[in-house]
Length: 96
Image 1 (cartoon, rainbow, N blue to C red):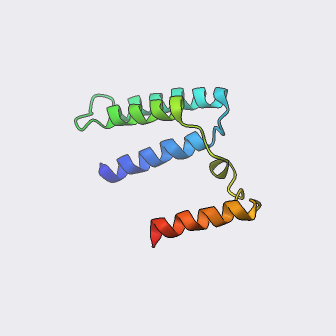
Image 2: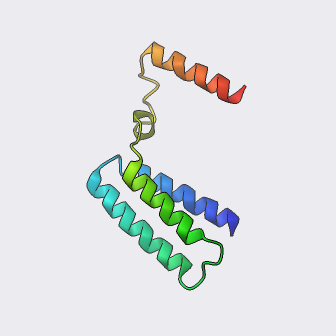
Image 3: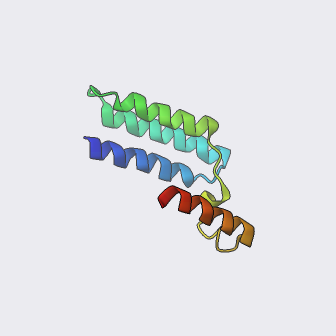
């Protein structure tokens, strides 16, 4: 179930990104995702999956604003040199 849970959480986030911060799309995403969780966990939620998924949905819906790089995959291709340099520095610190 852990692998399926991770896939479900990943799908929640990926589908949230598709809303592109549009308030109407975010609302519809929230409703559809909650319905999906209810269908999946109907009568069987011993490990708190539903609670965790609902928390994730509400946090994304209420507090998460997407950055331009999440909205456009080519953002850094056309970004100013200073922003690219800053990103490279952050990535080096994170992965080296």
